[in-house]
Length: 117
Image (cartoon, rainbow, N blue to C red; front, side):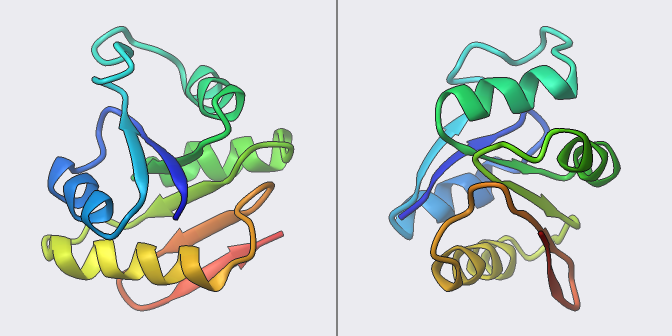
């Protein structure tokens, strides 16, 4: 089981499916951080301070943040997939394949999964 923080643009159906798979997922809305225009570095700081890996579709900004601030609880950047079950399963598989998400950038694309140290 992983502790995750879904930014405000992440799909709620995928969040629900990940919860069903046993993951502890906090959404930006539940954390009262939605609709406030919180900048991505602050999203990462919030997740890190709560020991949660970020779930996001905002690939470019979070890949850059990973390079600038590699000491985080994990970042999982995803390509949008209209098949929510497939996306949740791929995220779940990645999480269980890793001993820890700490300091890792994981890219979950439609065709592949990539890990960046």
